[in-house]
Structure formats: C-alpha cells, structure tokens
Length: 281
Image (cartoon, rainbow, N blue to C red; front, side, top):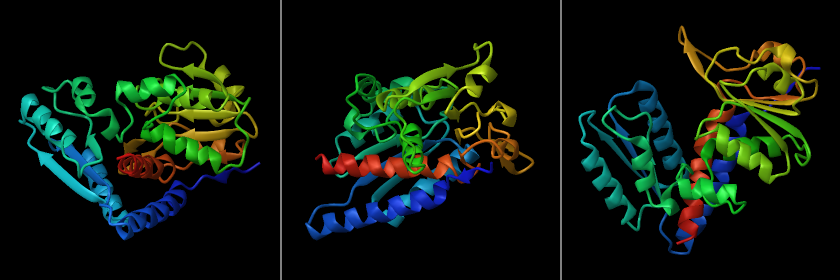
C-alpha cells in the first residue's frame, strides 16, 4: 500500500478562493471586509515568517489587516491596552497574539483578555469550553484545519478509533474534543504514556503533535490508517515531522506531508474564523 497525500496547500488554496468570493460578495452588499489584527512581540524568526504568511493570506482574500510588530521590551500593560483597543474596534473581527512571547508576559492571561468573539485562534477558554460542551463557536485553528483534511479523505469518522499523540492546549486537547464531536473513540497519548506505540498501532486515525522528529515509526501504523503529522522540526535547514514519513506511507491510506500538510490548513482556518466572526456582527 502507498498512501494518498493530503495536500494542505491545494486544499487551503481552494478555501481561500471561496473566502475571497465571500468578501467580494460582502463588498457588493456595501459591507466592510473582515479585519484581522496580529500582535508580534520581539524578534523570533519563525514567528516573523508565520506573521508574514498570515499577512499575505489576508491580502489575498481581501481582508483588512493590522500587523503590529512590537519591541521585545514592550511592557505587559502596553500589550494589554492594545488588546483592549482592538476589542473595542468595530473594524477588527479577529485578534491574534503571536506566540511565543518574551518572558515578561503571561501568555494565558493575555489570550484570555481577547474578546472571545474575536478569538480567531480559537484558544480562549470560553471557545474551548463551548467545544467541550458540544456547542462549537470559534474553533482552534490547527484542529479545525485537521478536521477539514479528514473530510477530504471521504472516510466516515463516526465509530473510528483515533489516537492523538501530544496534549497541548492549542492542538492535542481541542483535537480530542473535535474527534469526540464527530463520534470517534479517542485515545490521548502524551509524555506520561507508557506505551504510545500500542495506542498508535490500533488507531484508524493517528494525529501526532509533539515536535519530536521521527517519534512515530512507520511500523507502528495500522494498515489503512489516516496519518496527520502536525509536528515540525528544523534541522540543517530542512523540515521534518513527528512521523517517519517514508515508512509510514507504505502502510497508511492517507498521510500529510511536512511541510505542506497541516500548516496551510491552520492559517486558512484562521481566515475562516475571521469571516465567521465578521458575518456574526
């Protein structure tokens, strides 16, 4: 068996086209375009690249975008005041605080300061809580993008066994809730799990989000499984995922590449959330 590739770049491009059409339709009805503000603090090179990509995406679909690159010496009170300003700005539908932040910041408190209706990253406790209660609002971007990838396989997810490796607040935990919502039986494997391999080996859907290169061996994969690789590690200017891609693709039915799989879907999910927020006002 050789896997079919879940091409996140191609799927995301199709979704951006639909979003651009929706923005054009809003303009035709004399409605403003959705607006997104991104706050970047300090000079973290990967964060700078990611923010530039977000800016490019916003430009492509016709969103208003307000990118603010702040000094690493910015005080927490200044960033809090900026979030309050954007919360009150009716032209802004989405607020993103790019992580990681410099050490003087409490990231959790800042993210909670964002109006949940403008939390287009989908990580505010209110939005995660609504998902836990089976009343999804704005959804966490990476899990939302993964659900879109899973839809493109054409597989019925209800009743499947899924294993998520990694239990972060941004990916692993909300991913568990997303899969529960569609009727999967979900196992969460994490750094305290004693036998991750056995949980992966029985899974119809494997999602790994640890950032540990090659953690998921190809011979762990159940034949015919769907494998979603969220992890990303840079070594010698090359990017690697959590999954041993070449070995896993000989057993899986579908698999995401790194790069070009989950990353583009995370970004386009933010655009979908911003459009949803704008349409709700």
